[in-house]
Image (cartoon, rainbow, N blue to C red; front, side, top):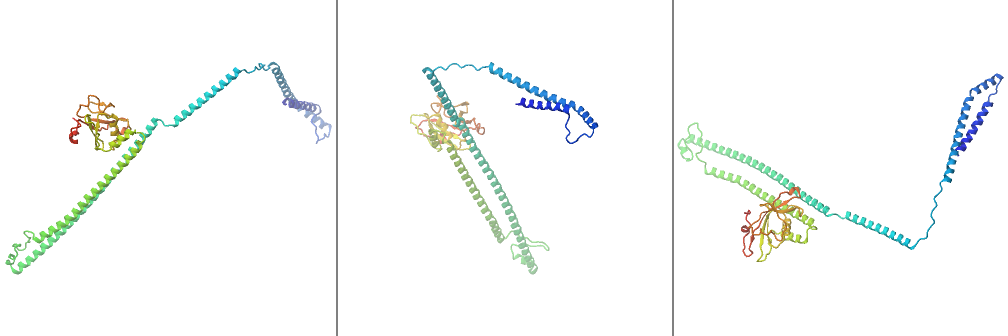
Length: 437
């Protein structure tokens, strides 16, 4: 299509160039007036002849190139059409029963492979959706840390509030003491002023009596003495009336002070009772949350041991011929817990009992263990509460160490126990001395 258009344009250009060469450009609007004008027009045509020829040659070259391109393309297509023929396919062979069975087996194998891959992907997706034990333990540890952090924050806030209340009470006591001192000073000054006024009045009366009746008049008053002229007279001893007034004033001063002291003591006692009640409520709520958090992880035996270990004075019934161990544990908060264990009980029962105590720090089960103080060695679970050869010792000093949480590293709980015969009854003080020896 391109070559055809180019050929047409080239033909038109060649015809136009030949016509313009021999006949010139037509002038339809202007006719030559003379021969001279015609000659001038012919001369102008001669000067424009090279441009017309160049245009014609250029169009001819374009036409020839397009024609040559079309010719080469046609030759190449013809060569390809007759040289490269498609390969002949082999004749179709009829399918046999073996071929059908092989195809069915291959299809079944492919289907089984796809089904196995689908099952594997479903199992992997189910495993990914199901939380792993490690993730569960991590979430539980974080929950315990959050509970401990909340408890510490509340305890710090309570201590800060108690400090503020104590500071306010101290300020009020200081203000009350200053007010009482000022009031006492004012009363003392008023008492001294009244005593001075009474003494001066009595002195003036004595002077008037001496001046009126002479020196003998002063002897009529046993409490007065001779006064030199121009001197001042003071009573040698206070009169009973003044002593009674002083005692009444002192009683009036002591009564409000005693009332204020009694009120302060009652106020302090009520504040201490309120603080103790608040602390008990917080501990009960914390223990309730901890039991709710550990309800799903502790086994039934551990839950039973925790319920039995909540009573500090609970004792384990032992056989008359079996050996028992009385254990006393001192917790970090200062509280004590006592329980008796039989020799046939497992080591896990002791751990569950310690973990279930209200004063025990919030630690993960398995993150802490028992260790003897001297010689220092880690205790592991055995058939009974103590390994063979250690049951003859009169007492053991054990410690509870944490290696998981940073806040409870090297917190020791002292355990003291003593093997005893079931028939011999000893008091708690005799069986559990203050320190192991």
